[in-house]
Image 1 (cartoon, helix red, strand yellow):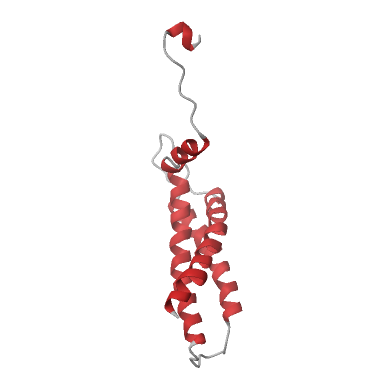
Image 2 (spheres, rainbow, N blue to C red):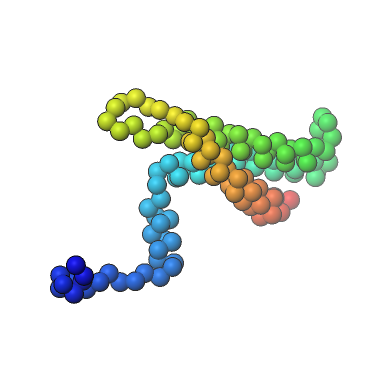
Amino acid sequence: MTARDTGREPPRQRSWLEVRWRQFRNAPRPIVRAVAASLSVAIVLATAYVAYDVAIARGAALPGGDLRAAALLAYVAIVLAGGSLVTYLVVPQPRGSGSEVRRSAWSAALGLFAAVPIAYLVLVVAVQIIRPLIA
């Protein structure tokens, strides 16, 4: 049965941008939770990194000296692990008709895959945009 047979017009063809905007507005809840978990961990750690970077740049005598490279490595590792762990905790599997809440490694993998670009983007914004405004 076609649109002609029913007397209705076929649906309007949407542009690429309209399709992507609709997908963005109607994102699945697990994806939103995974991104929010990784984003919250990354923002907290990027704030700490920028504070450390500003302190080093202003000549503060901190124990251990200039460990900015190690701090970046720790930032990335903690954002990946923290985003994965928080997503594991807040994104349960669908439970169907039962009331039992189940978790799986797939939730943690979802968090890991969401944390990779989030860690990079938050760090770029913190170091390239926020840091120069503070200094």
